[in-house]
Amino acid sequence: MTTFAVYVAHDMTAPVSGGVLASLRSPRIVSTLFVRMPRSYFVWSWTILAAVVASGLAFATGSFSLTGVETVVFVLIFGWISLFVRFLGVAGQHPAKQDAAPRADPTSAGRSRGEA
Image (cartoon, rainbow, N blue to C red; front, side, top):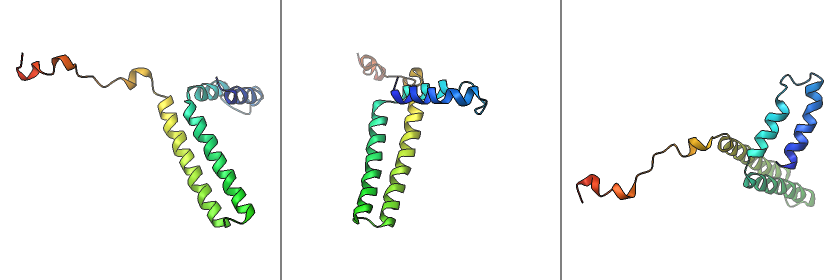
């Protein structure tokens, strides 16, 4: 379990017990969601965050204009959302669905054409 998932689940218990969040399962759903995310998702997320910070620093030093920073940050955030949706789809798959395609038996490939 990732540390982030533990913190989020812990922080969500107070709004659930206070009645702010309607679903009592919210902390468990969030922690389960982030447990299933692969390590590469978190690596790319930190990389994108570093690029956003670097873009802001480039603006602060005068290397980028505000329009350039906005364009770079838009592309990075759009890419991160796409990455999140992609990994969310992969994390939600069951192992049985990943191996659903039947595999051909290489030993019977020649026999199907009448060869012995």
